[in-house]
Length: 80
Image (cartoon, rainbow, N blue to C red; front, side, top):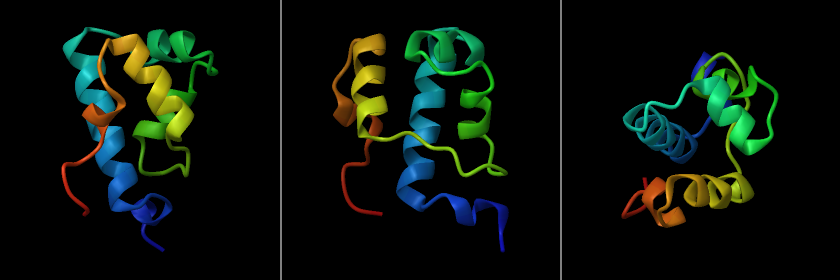
């Protein structure tokens, strides 16, 4: 089993987009975890292909609040 088999293409797309936003704002994984009320290591698990952790729709909605954008910003324009 591939380590990325835990996450689908759409989930990986969302994770990459969130990471882009996080890095552009200069927010660390630990800071984002705090803003989302997650444990400190959880963002690292989401961003790592070795763990099955991923964002759900509620997370995406909260991320949009944090980054001051629409939840659509984290989704592709068409299906993958």
